[in-house]
Image (cartoon, rainbow, N blue to C red; front, side, top):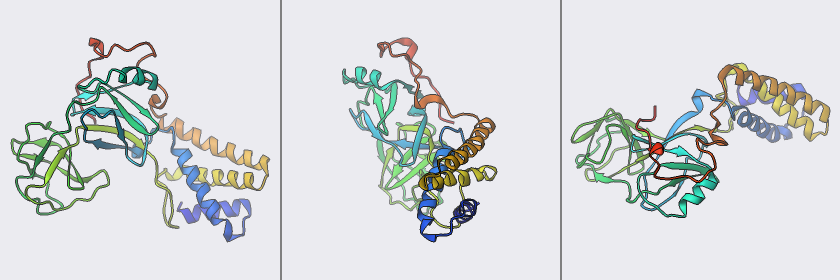
Length: 290
């Protein structure tokens, strides 16, 4: 169902005739979409982001559409362990630097411990990138890079899946909603050495022909959610509760169908005891984001 079709279905269901209510209904439909997608492990909501480390910096901004963290990895080989904010505060009092080992999501920011001692590595292009579809990019130095990873040239994030002594190859251009572009010989390449996989929020429906990414079989839930909000607005609380219960039945069915999202939003792999930051059993794992 498109936004217009969902709005019309809600109007018919609630016998709404005034076009002046369209803004309220559209907002309610988008609120319903956000609520419905929350806490469910939708495969189409899982995506990746990346950051360039900054020396002695503990706190990093995340993608605008970030919802829930799945994993954080440094240089494609060190998985970071999630901890609580209280643990992070205790650890960060030492102002240590080194390979990051722990992370917490707090106030919408990624917070790491320890901080990196140096900025992310940079190099330059040793040849111009002539068009936006080139899948191999020549660099002056590749020794600081891993066989796969991400970097940024000008405003474009590039993902590579293999490397030679002079090039990153099998590149995906314009990653992370950036735009693939041409680049001059000598342009700066900065390693995005911190990568994270996460569940994103869905973009609001705005145009009449926008269709929700939620599977079609669950679209009726948006009608029930918007109807519940309409009845709440008109103080028909019995109908509001009835519509919301119908909405929850469909949402719970979706949870049963697709499984629940990881519990990392509220839990950690460690208890709230004092953390020994150098304990051998907390050595970061080797691996890569899949």
